[in-house]
Length: 170
Image (cartoon, rainbow, N blue to C red; front, side):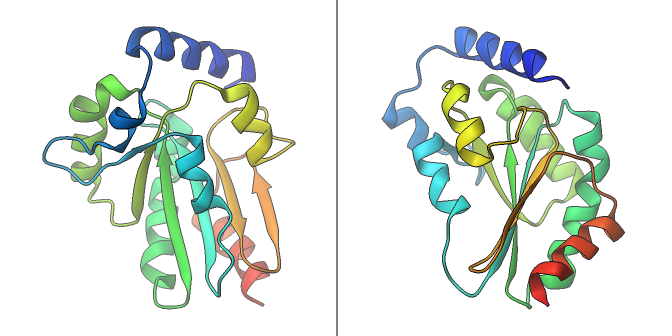
């Protein structure tokens, strides 16, 4: 998806969802463990400085390339969770569709990696702050650890994802 289309979607979402207050952001959805974060709350997940390697994938249930690659992230999570690797799936789904789309999708696919819901209408700030070369398209992935940081605006197969992760572990 081109940046202009992604930005249009974010603008429409912001218009229909109204202004998000700090109190709303901290709430979790009914009967679930999905927490909605704004960028200031998401940022610590993107800059941890410990012995873990983080694989942070930005995705949405309405993004077919994202859905196609999710099994690769789940497989990576299962294989490497005991090896100081944490997979974080950051959903960009629309807030009004968390109960109707996101939660049922997570349950149906039996996703086990950490899942966060992200909503922040100031995309002109957070997109380049996450990665200067990010156009705003998804899927997008950030892999980082204490020594290295790399951003990918692409779809991964499991083999490609594992190969990239290995460059961080070696």
